[in-house]
Length: 224
Image 1 (cartoon, rainbow, N blue to C red):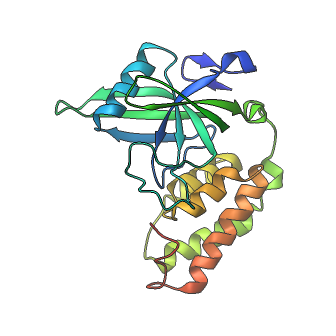
Image 2 (image 1 turned 45 degrees about the horizontal axis):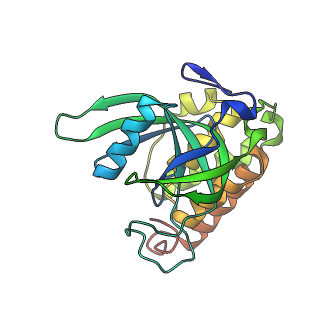
């Protein structure tokens, strides 16, 4: 996997521990690009450390099952997230950082590491298979995916750049639609945890078809 100015091929290319950024509804996938607007002091400090070091951040959602306040300093977290590399960075002038994370590979949290820093750090196990580029293009039912995507746009009176959509590879199409989808945290997590591109495409189709079946005005439990 080539991301920014770095290559990630073997386990030694990835850290044993990583600072994590818990954010509900945020989905980063390997090969994807996630824009972030960072303003909390603890996360400003986290990005300062990342930029001074490996430039790597772990994106993860707060737990979907715990009742603990997700805005607390140490909320329970989902066990699977995605490592991202800071590939774009700018200061806003009003104390914020505007950054972009490029997805490298998914990970499973192992245990939290005690630290004096205001942000949280965890030991992790990376999904090494995400670093291997495999030809999964033919495994995706592109016709059905585009059909439900068009139906969703029509139902919500939205438009798309169909010329760009038609040019996109199946991998780009599935991952981009998954990351941009307006689904809730549970649906985003299901897309992240899909075993491969085919499974992610099938999950995306199923969620969208379910949403369409409910109809407009009855989507509160699935949309953020």
